[in-house]
Image 1 (spheres, rainbow, N blue to C red):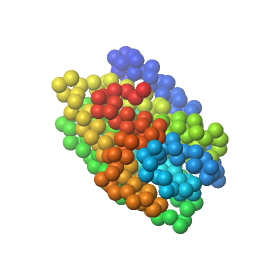
Image 2: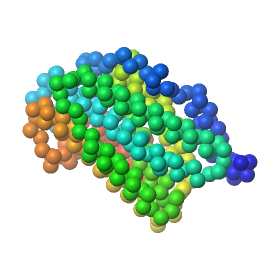
Image 3: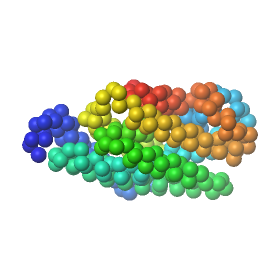
Image 4: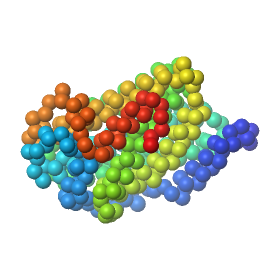
Length: 298
């Protein structure tokens, strides 16, 4: 272990800090989240212009205040569903990372990462169920397509011939999804001053762990830096997977809009993605471009 620590002194310092913070600044969803809390209709209405695919496009003119609240509630369920599924299916890719470094502190942090992903999956499942229970008259959000796509995205990464390429691909996908949830927390904090609501708590607790995960992601990507002639392959493949997942998430929003009476067809999705003025959406779509270029999010 000492030899490995000496060989990677920067990594050793980062891992020592990440391991310490995973013990002192993490959470247990069953205990720390107040599951009796609610996010109010007024708060969902405040999230609509910041988050909605339809914001600024003009196609949502027929939606009244109640419909916008329902739409915003579905949007939270949609991203929570996606994030929970991605973290569940990332576990296999994370377990393979143990082989990258035999150092004890490295294995310890991978263990923290895995535990936290399992907790996150459970937290998002429970949060989606509670948000869904508040509108029993509405149909459940489609999930099978997103589940299959996330499985496919991680399965594709296992096709690369070397461990470096496989882990580079997996951590680029993870970094994309984790950064989106950091944006989600930032947007929720900015638009909803009250911190006690269920949606506010879920994103805030999740961001507590994800800020560490992003640091670990960057460390792995630096360790696995590939030559320029080869680096484009996992980068562009990961970018294509992120584009697919983004399309599916936004297609679910069209599904919600149709349930609320808007006559929107799937072929209109690319145009709506270009036209939306919602700041959360604009940041996410810019992140896709950065992922394709291999850049860190700003």
